[in-house]
Amino acid sequence: MQIKGSYTWFVRIGLILIGVAGYIFAIGDAMIPQEFGMFSATEDPKGFAELVTMEGFRFWTLRGIIGAPLETIGTIALFFGLIGSPKETWAFWGMLLAVLADLFGTGMFMIMYYVFPHVGEVILEGNTAVASVASLEGFMPVMGFMFLGTVVGLILLAVAIWQSGRFPKWSGVMAVVGFLALIIQTSYVIQILANVVWGSAYLWMAVYSWNRLPWGQPEPELA
Image (cartoon, rainbow, N blue to C red; front, side, top):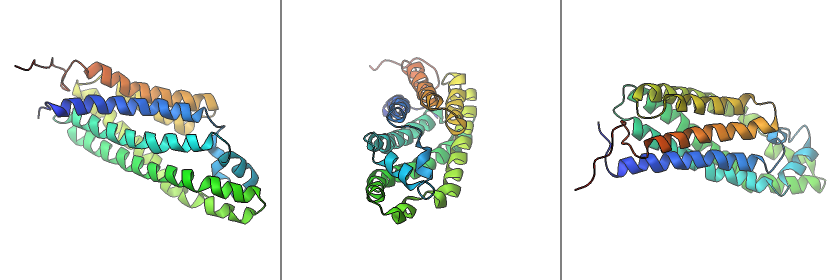
């Protein structure tokens, strides 16, 4: 199946958008300390409150509200670029898993943006009982599934990219490595760099395909 006209542009623009999303996440991560404090609302209410009421927190959550939908668009665009490739089915399931995770992430970021700062203000006023409202402990199994789904989805897409001949072979691997680094990262700097890595992977795909149709052939001139 060939991809023509507006589909070609959708693939190109979508890959740019998801690449930009990586840099948006990186900039947002530079605005606050490590966000692991958000998972300790009940254990350390004061530390949680200080984190979610600081000036950069809303920007950090806003970067997720903006970035996650851009990831969704870009992932769907990547699948369109892989339609008709040897591993199209793998690309479809990879896209589906990654998009479901992005949609869940968008919802989580919206809750954090609108709810957490207000809970933090109440805690700082002395009412630590409300900390349970912002506890993410109940979401941990779902978040674990989300991370696992994203990793599996990206691996499936990486295999499809590798065998497609339409994008740089290592770009898919680069995206997987960047996301895995986010999960296992142990430092603030690595977290920022990991976002830059996976964002750059998609920009690499976009630049590579800009003067090509998705199957790697020069785009014919319009009559």
